[in-house]
Length: 255
Image 1 (cartoon, helix red, strand yellow):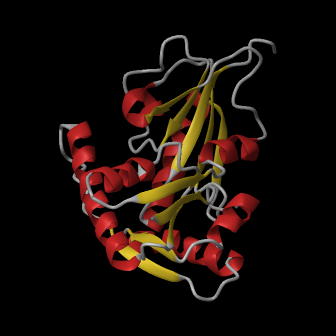
Image 2: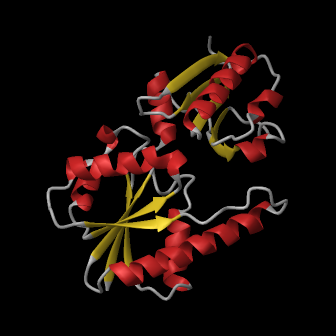
């Protein structure tokens, strides 16, 4: 049976790779890389750098998979995502059938951690269930943007006895979850934090975390909201894309 490794490569810094991930890289015969277009060439370049730096075997192969267009205008969000994932799964299945031998090991490198805010595992599930490709799948965890964010800001995700919620920018439009004390927001495309006007909220925001383009802003939300919007807009215009994450929390009640 074909082996398939889903390898978390961290949030941007090639040094974020774990020893387990480096060992996994050297087990793979074929690496499948998703081509998301010229605007995101640097995401592919980082994967290439990681392979060049850490793989010692000379005979591995790289197969490119063209990213299908995703309908971001559909009013039915979940249906649009399901369609996009199915299209992706069909392309993954075809590439694996065509380029990975029955007794070979394939791999895909996942930004951050494969288990947090990433669709790869769901797509690989669909490859095995609907795509007719039998795979023995192994997941290698990575350092997520959430871990890197709080490390860069030198804070913890929660304080004594407090809970953490991870949510999306889409859900944050409806306001903070009830009784939330520490809320991590992933990939908020529309700056939903603008709607939060409570003066007792702090924000720890970061974009391109772990890369040379890294941007960090923190402070009382009402005081830094305009700064975040400005630097975010400028960065997106400059690079053509942005990946950002932030933590919002109530002000420390112990101070």
